[in-house]
Image (cartoon, rainbow, N blue to C red; front, side):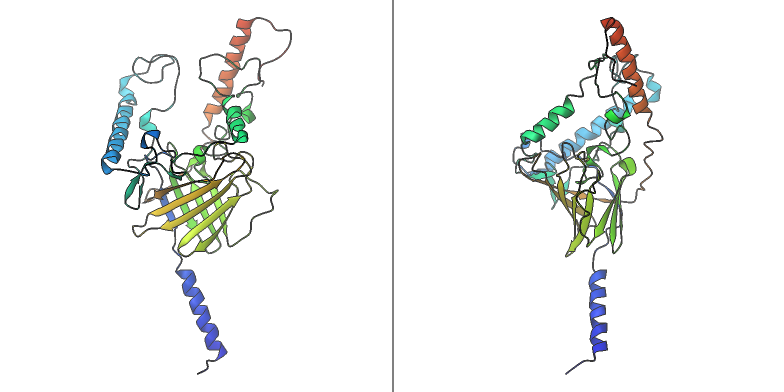
Length: 348
């Protein structure tokens, strides 16, 4: 029995259309906050999972710390001592946020019905692999610019980490979220852990609440030329069954992922479970920084919470205050050291 060509064409169109419609729609908002750390605490060794009792203990500790932070943040408690960090009787360092302002979530990461001890699951110890000599040099260079704040311009007469805006970190300048919140890989941060996905047939947009970074994934496309690079890299995607696979290359030399270089390559996989929770997994490859690739996995629960604009530039008083504070410390140091023949501090 034969069929008219028009009938076969129509049938093929229906089949292709049905296949396209079968792809899951990941559009929506997700709260990726989790008490599970990126790297496994060494006390767990090579244990991938923790018991429900161990998970409840961690959750209880987090709840208690948040409650203690709320007491410290009570405006009726009065101002802390001059220069204090907000804790009773403290003086000296101003410090940062207390635990009331930190949003690491309320539960440990649950994967396949079991609580994970870490987001990283490969290598087996749940920790990032050994650094290469180049990776160790990058780490040494990064930490050489920062020390504990002892109220003195240790870098004087220069150069220093607060010489000008361009010498501060990209997150201090509100140019890129810290802790690789926008990715790739996308990792939880201290707060602002909402992400929103908007999906079309040709593109997938992943919006990060922190610094409102937006990653644009081009579907079924090739990578841009290697000389076209950006902080978030060049992301392309395709479907493998009901799993969205994203590959990102073409980074600049300072990706959001700590210590990574322009040679970074990240592969990500998004898969929706029966409960609507996205399973997010990734593999990091940067042979110039880490001796072997490493992989992680954790859930993205859906949320009805809305992602509001993170107006970092508009309220970035901290960077200006850091630069002004550095100039004051340099002036104090110059006065204490006495006159110099030449040389200036880190600069205007």
